[in-house]
Length: 466
Ligand code: MN
Ligand code: MN
Image: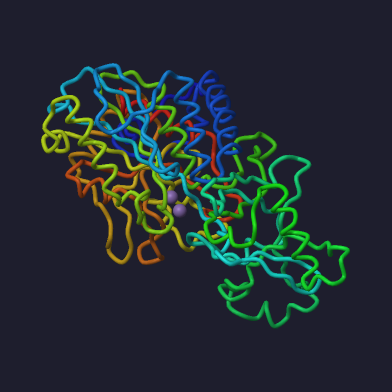
């Protein structure tokens, strides 16, 4: 490397922009930190496969860091570390900073903790051909054919007739049974395979095998179903009617694993959006800047952020207003001064499907956390298109802290699109831009991310809260 750059080349390098691979530019120490941070993330993924579990895990981690539960009306003061749980399905963690709230505003990180999955129907149980099944209704946008022929676990809650709530998690422990959705053998799949991929497996074929053992009493009409009901009753005190008030989710019974000989990547269920939720959570737990910082971990993003646990619920606005009231600050002024990173995943450039991307504006794997100035579809429709001024401000924060980051759009123009919760925060008159982690095979039962991008997101959030 003794050859000197020509003056022209040096000037070109100074003027031109190029994305850089974060692994390549990271110091040895930083690489070690990337791999260490990923271990905590994988443990979080394995503990938290549903929004309820993610919520409980966040609360556990927060309490370990000295955060205490907050209820509307509680007094607050600088230095307070609190968490607010919304119906067990979303959670806001916050710390009160020393800076003036009306001048400095809130620093908000918002991610979602629900992921695509198969929800058990309200009247789901039936027996046929020697097997017992649970009918499901898929949750979020998924390729239905991907959810067959793999081990599935059941997570959730059942509210019994008497109001008692029973937790259920089957299929995660090594000696647990798992559940299964069958697919057609290729020998008889000619007609199936000639059809449209969206019809290869249809919604009403996503039926979960949950039993196959007939009871010994030959007079029982549904002997396999009897065995399943008998087990559910003995284990959980359930009867069939209790499915009516249950939320049971079938998710892949697969733990998070390192991927590749070099372990650079992580494969797991539910990177979308726990790969942003985890850094948002750890940033607020660890961060000790002067700002009042919030990590909002919301539910129901995958089905439009509706409902009282989704980001469109008034509860988050109410909480922010309560914080302002407790600190004697004008909520309208505070909102105007607040800043938000909407932390959601984006599509990583996939060389096997290059045609749907525009490479210059695609998120490249391992090139750091990815900012999306806008999302949406058909000409940015439905998108919060962040102001250049705010993007510039975030850019300066990252430059000061040495954050490795990139920008991208989700796919090439008119190839499709997607949205995030960014617009709901922006609608509150809060400067908001999307920043998250690029994912391969998004919404598949097992998705892929880079440890460099996870760590880049962690660094970006710390810089934002500094
Ligand atoms: Mn998402
Ligand atoms: Mn999603």
